[in-house]
Amino acid sequence: MPGDAKLGAVLRELRTVRRLTLATVARQARCTPALLSYVETGHRQPQSWLAEELDRIYETGGVVSSLARGVGTKPKENSGSGVPGADLFVVSLPQGGVAMPLSRREVLTALGLGVVTGRLQGEFERALDSIELDGDILRSLDNAYGAFKETARVLPPAQLIDAMIGNVAILDGLRRRATSGDQHRYSTLQARYAELLSWLSEEAGDLSGAVWWIDRASQWAQAAHWSGMTAWGVVRRTSMVMSFSGDGLRIVDQARLVLDMPHASPRMKGLAAKNIAYGYALAGNRDESHRALDAAMGWLAQPVREDDAALAAHSIVSDDLFAVHQAKCDIYSGYGARAISVLEPRLEPVAGISFRVATVTRASLAWAYANAGQPAEACRVAWETLDAIEQIDSLGARSELRRAVPVLNRWHGRSDVQDVMHRLDSRAPIT
Image (tube, rainbow, N blue to C red; front, side, top):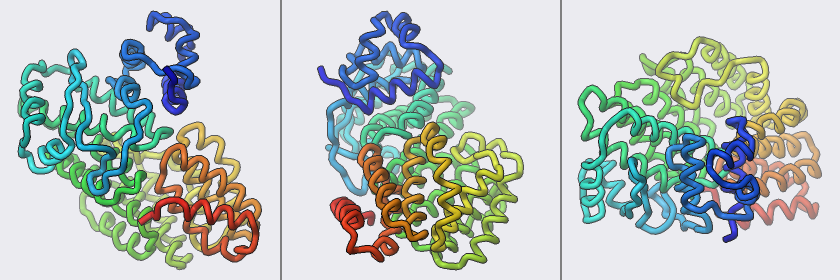
C-alpha cells in the first residue's frame, strides 16, 4: 500500500534524533531495514504491528500508531471547534490500545463543562473504569505529548489534533479517578496538551479553537496551581492577535497585562515585552520598540523559574537571539538590509530544529528583501515560503508573508510579483 512522504519524514526524524540506525531499529522491531527504508521514504504505509513496534522503540506513547491510522485521510475544516473533520474520531485507550470511536461534540462538552452526554461518551467512561492507574499510564501520555511536539514541527495540524484530543479526554477521565494527591499531575499534563492544541489550532487558522484551548490550558493549570501557564496563556493571546490581525497597538495592550501580573515570572514578562516590541514596530514606533526589546532581553536573561521549565518558552538568551528579535522589529518598522544579513545565515540551522519555525523566518526574510528594494529576491524567498506552507499549513508564516504585500505592490507590474500575489490570493484569507 502506498505510504505518506510526510509521515515517513517524521519517522526518520524520530529515529535520527535518537541516534538510531535503520539496522538497529529493524532488529528491535523484528523487520528488515529495507522495509523501514520504504516506510521512511514514503513508499510504504506502516502496518499497525510496525507502528506499534515503533511506538515502543521510540517511546512515543501511541503517536506513531495514531498517525499511521490517519495516512491518506484529508480532514475537512470545522471552524470553531479547534479540530478538523467529521464529528467522529477514534482514540486508542492505554493498556492494550483498544480503539474506540468518540464524538467530538461530546468530548468537547465533557472537557469544557464537565458534563458527560451521549452514548459514545458513556461507553468511553465505562472503558476508563477498567484502566489501572499507575505511573506507566502517565509516563506514556507524557511521552506522547513530547512526540506530538516533535511531529508538529513538520506535519499539518489536521494530522495531529484528533489524536491529541483523544489523549486529553483520557487524561481528564483518569484525573477524575485518581487520588487527590495525584490529580495535579494529570491536570498539569492536560494543560500542556491544551496549550499545544491552542497553538496548532492557531496555525490551522481557527481562532475560536485557539482561544478555546488556551482557556482550557489556564483552567487546568489553575487546578494544578501552575501560575506560569496562566501568564503564558496571556502571552499566547498576543501571538494570536499578531497572527489574525497584525494590530500592533492591540498586541501591546494585551502583552502589558502580563507585566502587571504580580506572580508573572521574569521569563513570562520577557516574552511579553518581546511581543510589545513587535507590536510597537508594527505600529511604526521604532523607539518604543527598541526600549521594549531591551527590557525583554533583561528579563529573559534571568534564571528560568521551575514552573516555566515545562513550557515551550525557555530559549537561552544570547546576542544571537537578540539579533533575531531586533531583525524582526526592523522588518516590521520598514527596514530590511540589516535584517537580511541576520536572518539569511540562520535559516538552515533553524530548519534543522523546526521546519515550521524556519518557514515563518523565511516569510520574514521575504519581507526584509521587499523592504530593502530587492523584489526579485523577495519573490524567490516568498515562493519558497509558499511551498513550505503547503506542506505544514502555517497561518503564522502566511500572515507574515501577507504583511509584505503592501511593499511588494510597489512592483505590481513585475511578472514574478504578480505570480506571488496570485498564489497568495488563491489561499483562504487569514481572518
